[in-house]
Length: 377
Image 1 (cartoon, rainbow, N blue to C red):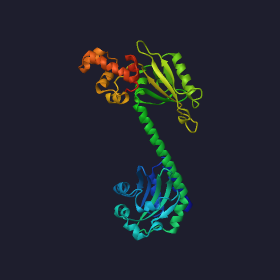
Image 2: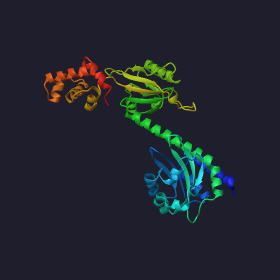
Image 3: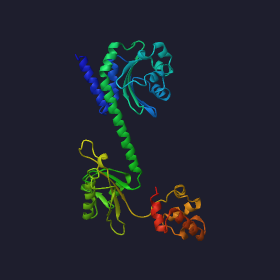
Image 4: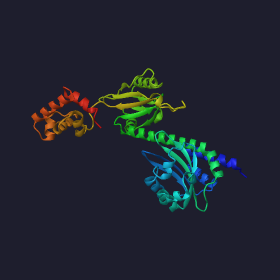
């Protein structure tokens, strides 16, 4: 039969598998519940400026939500243990008498409805920003309090609980950043590509995917899975040289480098900006695929939509009428067209346009279009 060491090793394996996302936390918590003769297991992550979350097994999700809303980080038990270091293991009896514990609103709101009467907690993380992680086991009154032998066993497990919690937090933070960056990439109006040193696309936003599908100045080798290729071999070679130069944390490349890729007449060239990602983009292990550059591809010309008039007023101090004229001018419309569109005289349109020039610091409409194009959504 498996001995205590076998059971310990199995729990440790499950903890690290859960933290790495190989298995869910439910399996690890269920094993802890079983090994310590508990009823409920909970892994909570809460912070002073975070809504918090709890991974749990064996209890009502409504009670968990109630705890997060009313008691997380604010109940008397949490306040008295706020300075516990990572790795510390305590029971409710270590913190306060049972009678006082049972009078807490946290107990009456969340534990008593679930029939829970005792707890043993490991402070799994205590971060400088105030974020706390706890892995806590709960028992019913029939199961009784956690005794010294069980506390000793939990303390033996505590270093692994802490490491698993640290991995879980790091992975969650990385996933959050990845999702935020992916969303930011999608919000770019330009076609955007994250590429490796061979100019193979690792990620593209919707505009980038559409550009490749249309083969409008850029496409993939090998039917879509290979490196980026331009319409002209010379442009392809120049693009790949810039991407290769971007590899190496910006050595030899300062800021963004631009390249014009030819497209069939009368289409204007595709302007591609190569932005080195440096060490931030590379895989930590040095293994492929490693992102080395962000490519932004845009076609010169007027914006498809004018900047919002509210933005023009805030940015340049324009009046409402001047902002409306400026928005039309940004699309290349002349004074006659602007006047007809806004129902004003051509003289009024020209007067407003002149004031827009003064306030934006330009002399000609072409310059105004270039300035306002940077504000277009």
